[in-house]
Every structure is written in C-alpha cells, then in structure tokens.
Length: 292
Image 1 (cartoon, rainbow, N blue to C red):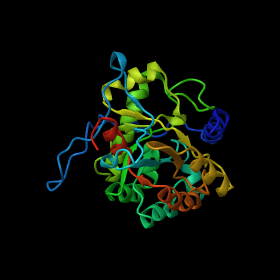
Image 2 (tube, helix red, strand yellow; image 1 turned 60 degrees about the vertical axis):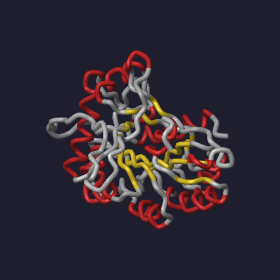
Image 3 (tube, rainbow, N blue to C red; image 1 turned 60 degrees about the horizontal axis):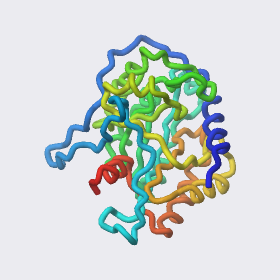
C-alpha cells in the first residue's frame, strides 16, 4: 500500500520543480467550462458523466470509481482502472522550453496507442499553448480525453508544496483560461473535469469553481513517477496500490517524469493479466453514477 509519506513526497518533489510559475502575457478572455462535449452528428448524445454538486452546492470531488470485482458484476465491465496523466507546464516556463527542455512526452502517448490503453490527460493551458499540435492530436484521438489542470499550475490553496497561489478571485478565470487555450489549439470537446495543481484544494476553492460546473478529479494511487529514475520502483508502487475503480496519477512531461513510458509498458500487461480493464475517467464517473 502507498503510505501518506510517499504520496506527500511525490507531490512535494513535483511541486518544488514547478514553483517558478508566473503569469505572462496579456490575459485572454476566458470562456466557461463546458458542461459536456458537443457530439458529432453520428455520435450518441449521452451527456458527459459528472457528479452532482456537493454540500451547499460546492464543486464535487471524485477520487475513485466503484470497487467492483469482475466476478461479481461483469455487466459493469469487471475490474476497471483509469490511468491519468498530468501534462504540466507553468506559465513562465517558455524560456526553458525554448532552450530545449521537453515538457511533452510523445513516446508515452505512442506507447498508450500501441498498447490500446484509454487514458485521461489533465492538461495545463500553458502546455496546450506550447504543444498545440500534440494537444490537438491527443484531443482528436477517441482513445483519449483531455481535462483541465488549470492554466498556470498555480496552487488553489496556500501552502501547497511550495507552489505560488492563485488569488481566490482569479481561480475561476485561471480554469477558464485553460479551456480558451484548448480551443485555440484545436482541441475538440475537452471534458468538464478539473484537477487541482498539487492536488490541493479547500472549501474556498470548491466554492469558487462551483459555477463552472466541473467535477474535480483527484486519485487514489500515486505512481511516484515525478523525477523518478527507477522505473521498477514506480511500477511496483502502482501495482501495489491499484484496486478496482482506481484512478492512477502519472505525468506526461519528459523532463519531470522520464521513466513513465517504461512504467506504462510494464504496468499495462500485468494489470491486464490480473483481470483489469483500462477506462477513461468519464467511464469511472459514469459507473459511479450507476451508468456502466
């Protein structure tokens, strides 16, 4: 099982590496978060699954799907697990990208396609601006779905692993600015899901985002891939933590998570051997709502 210390360490290391995240450039006019992706003419018009608002109308928080064992409920798809990948890039890291640092990971995306693994990518708006072709390619691939990881990768609470903080009155505009960046990159139908930078949130943040209609998505398995160099250790941590309905958090940034592709290539066949089926977050939320 993953200890709380290992969870905090993994997030702390990632947060420390992303502390230099100033806001640059002129503010773009934000647009509201989508309540559901617009279907194509031939697609089913089933609404995108979201959770109902929490107490007092607060933004709902999703951590994992139903703990369903395949032998007991095959109709719901058996054991399900969602691999999620944070495409992190902060607002002021353009010069680092220009100097050759890679915040993307095409090899990882290619591996997911090769292995036929659905996945949810939580993308910052700044990442979409830096890699618009990749953002568009991921977004147009039906195997994947793109969700919101903020524009700036500032924290939405104080004291979040050293990250700078978004002022409370700018939280909504920071989220909406990411959707604007996705739209400009040509990403179709980004999902109404939001992952807090650093995973840090409080009631004030949930209240500020409630009008956007997003579901906040956390996780129950920390991969520990942030700045890891031992792929075997990360693989063991994932396999030890996964349970039916798990949401696994990993990263889609080569410089920050260099062994993630190797980990995916090891984890996927083993979890399949154990009877797991890979799904996107939307499918887990749908299952949680009672819709397989």
